Length: 161
Image (cartoon, rainbow, N blue to C red):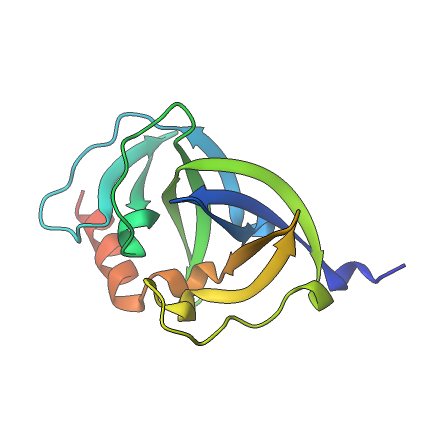
């Protein structure tokens, strides 16, 4: 039996027909799309903010962040609430996904490093590529999806509210 540290659980979700995954330990919860308050003068990928039990949580559209085409909201569209680390501080963000699939387990040996090829999104966000049910799964390094400058801007906007 493999040691527990060799196996990681990932929450898989879909963006524009592609399967992505994030370490389940970074996921706080999954929400239906609530009312999102628009915020002026923020990057195009920031949908706005939501009130999550009294806390202001920025909501990011991962499709737009990854330079994918924008999509209409469906019954499956949801927000994955994640914790992102920036300079040793934990920031809570909501990430819009087309749909959530399932929680899967992958051993470290099943995950290969991200390919360095021309792509429609930058591969530094991807910590590795796994294979599950015959499909590639892009495993996100959630801390690298957003730059320190973007997170700082989001965080400072929250404090201004």
